Length: 102
Length: 247
Image 1 (cartoon, each protein chain N blue to C red):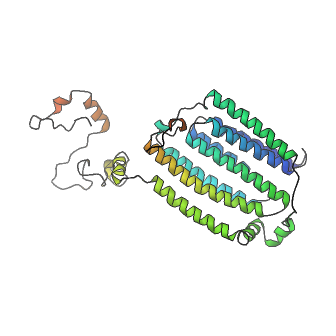
Image 2: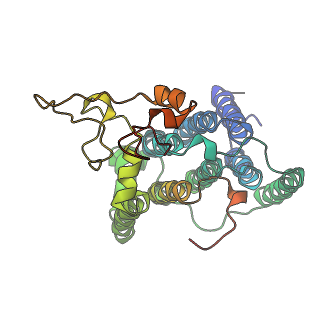
Image 3: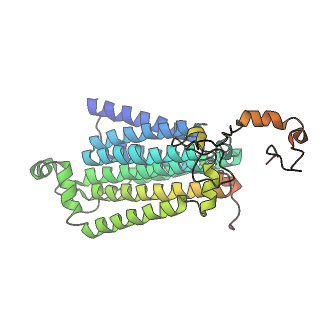
């Protein structure tokens, strides 16, 4: 408790991930679900950096850089999909989307 | 209890509380601001773990790019399309909390019972100091061990940008013209857009000398007229041809 170990960071990462997961499971607004996915990715980044810090390597930090790049690409494509959805079906409510046609 | 521990608990507390704020915020803009706050505090924790470069990247990419993109799309989406706030059905909430507690227990057991496998690396403080800092150390790994992955990521970003453009463009040009009638153009007076077809255009942006200047009827006035009898405005000469015909 008085000495910072890697377990502190891992527990913080787990709590952040679980909060993001609960947001994905409960909210219906697709934009908020998107933000919660970003939060979960961020939690995973934190645990990767914590493991790299523990094992004294730089590989974890390189991996996090790749994760952030992929997250940026995912954000661009995901927000494009959200815009196309709001133009086609006039809603961003995930419960309202129940068709595969059009 | 050293200062480091105090700072860690402060950052972790604010990060967790703002993460909870994303889940319970009724306004999506507030959720975005909470997300920025949570990511900033996580960047502070990255600094505590010796990853200064990644903290900077986190702030620049997430707060500078992704959140601006999210808020941009939030403004582009019609507010009528947004679902009103209620955090799912009660069944969903109960299931989410149950799954969260179970997952937290599992992860906690896994964290407390894990054993370290493999040799420790050699990236201690002295080696990083010798290389010139955290940025140099990350670049050293990135451009030697992960060079191919780095190139693939640049390709993924390029494809992602092209995909986003394709998804965000309207399918037909006519649809874009129809949408642009509702926007206010700064190029011409009275929001008249040159891209509109001839019949839709209210007035010529360039005043033609000698031509009869036709004042476009304001939207509120048009509504007011429409509440009265439309036939009273019909010219006798052109049957059925009223400019106040309801659209």
